[in-house]
Length: 91
Image (tube, rainbow, N blue to C red; front, top):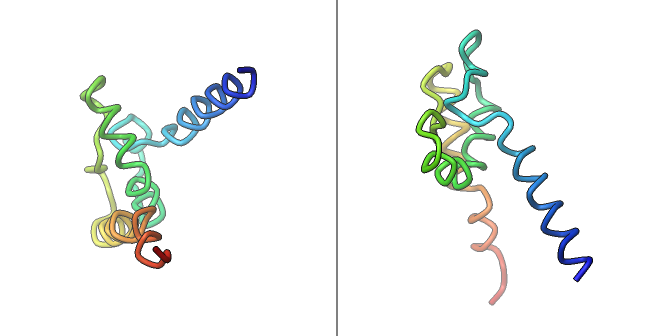
């Protein structure tokens, strides 16, 4: 029981830390999101989608970005992110 509660608390803290630089927040008003932020936003896209249901200001994709480099990073993370590992696993 105690380990389950500790694991739940750690998961909640981890989710909060992961979403600290979510797209659509005020973080990218002064500077544009680049390649590495594109990768990051691609990885946390499922969490951002759920967050967007409760806060419409949070987006999955950052509109204030550097263009092609951000798009490339976002695309790499979406396609080859966590789901890409299942293609190399053995049945």
